[in-house]
Length: 156
Ligand SMILES: CC(C)(COP(=O)(O)OP(=O)(O)OC[C@H]1O[C@@H](n2cnc3c(N)ncnc32)[C@H](O)[C@@H]1OP(=O)(O)O)[C@@H](O)C(=O)NCCC(=O)NCCS
Image (cartoon, rainbow, N blue to C red):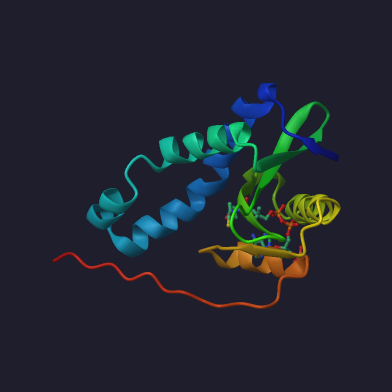
């Protein structure tokens, strides 16, 4: 397996992996929130995810890396350099094809992002997540300072 920059030809595979990878989280969120709140706050989450990936590919401040084995994309991870906070960057959407999760691919992708950010002179990196598996994966590559936020929802 090796990690390289995402090219235009990879966008379709990255979108497909993103939808597969996030489906389980969305299923859990739907169960917690109930159908009506979930549908109201996350309508067409799949389309939004695809649009995000298209944006990340085009934006000059963002980069996506893909993990590839035997000509197959297994996972991806992205970052954005901050425009207004010098020396900082944010890890953005990332995912590993469910079939290939828990094999070190996510960690390898995060390590690659971090090493590329270091090369770019970035000194601080931030990431935000709403799920415990991703938390563990981020902690595994060294993230430790944490501020937790809670999202409340109510039908009124
Ligand atoms: C988060 C994600 C990218 C991690 O990818 P991965 O290739 O499975 O990660 P790794 O194999 O490198 O695992 C890293 C650590 O994460 C944790 N982890 C990964 N999968 C786990 C699971 N199913 N259950 C519990 N912990 C898990 C473990 O602590 C693991 O370290 P370990 O293997 O030493 O125990 C993957 O789970 C995913 O695609 N999730 C859905 C999309 C998502 O939530 N993305 C992050 C958005 S913020």
